[in-house]
Image 1 (spheres, rainbow over the protein chains, first blue to last red):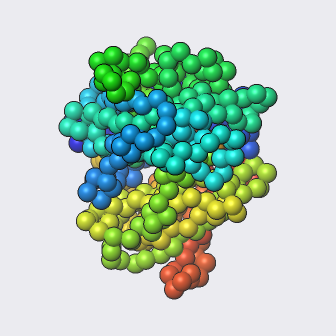
Image 2 (cartoon, rainbow over the protein chains, first blue to last red):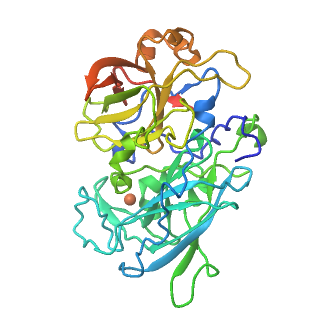
Image 3 (cartoon, rainbow over the protein chains, first blue to last red):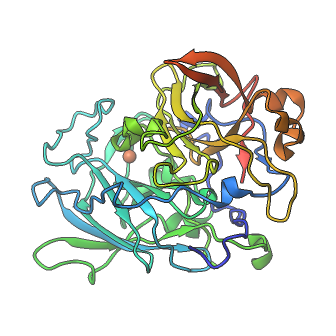
Length: 238
Length: 178
Ligand SMILES: [Fe+2]
């Protein structure tokens, strides 16, 4: 699956990942460990370097979250690639997708936002990357919704993703945002990534080449999974 | 080189993905010693974490058409999770190292309030390899104990092990940087 299957995954690049304790995001207060994370004294092992592999025969892909064309909202196509930190395509990655509907409401019992459900939109998808690491799916643009983190708090439009790579150390859950959203500057979850360039890579790019005439707007969004290598990331970025 | 994509919280609505059958890793017909692994997840106030996504991954037994070694369970309102799986065997250590690892499963926690997932392991109390396991041996006894599941009898006729997880505070579980 990769060029160097026996090599461990590199540590995360400094600033590329959020801290567990984030005073701006209230729910972290009682849920972050006080102890420092413990490094494996023996280094990564088969438990971290291998991973379950999923196939569409057992987990059928759902590439059209609009179910034909009946879901309400602005239809969009999202496509891109899954790469590792060296830019190598990652084939066979399972990507789970979930999101609110166009009104900003999840089809979930615990979502009590006073916005309408859409009987034609459940809000889940499942895609697999091809040999070139590419994926694509069709959905509707999710709406913003309020949350109670602070006064008048609203989440920017976003789509949730869950990725399974070739090693369990690559397991990733993230969110994708949309360009030009005025809520991004106010959102503690988007803002939690310290490194600005890495943070801004969570924003999809509008892509006229992906846009289909008379059908749907197109967005491009690439994911980067941890790469394998003996050299710590820092040593390549003095 | 481009840094890995930033993690974001799974949030409170991840259950849209949930398939309750995933909590049973033997659902494809895998043969072996079936066990249940249960536990309660609590926060820094000792309150249950009722919206967590718990994932279990074990490289032992080796993957087969009836076994992929992976499961997912939601915690209930009481913070409880429950997996049915196969008892793992020992696995090799780091590449080039000779010390095997004691039988264990990897547990990954995602939840609202976790901006990046927490990773830990469940070992099995009484296993003779625990003494020499490189990770367990590196921890002082109170911290080590947080990684060891205890036998608690049978549940539906299946030997059951309990591994409670404390996110913060007294008896805080050891979480791993991998
Ligand atoms: Fe959301």
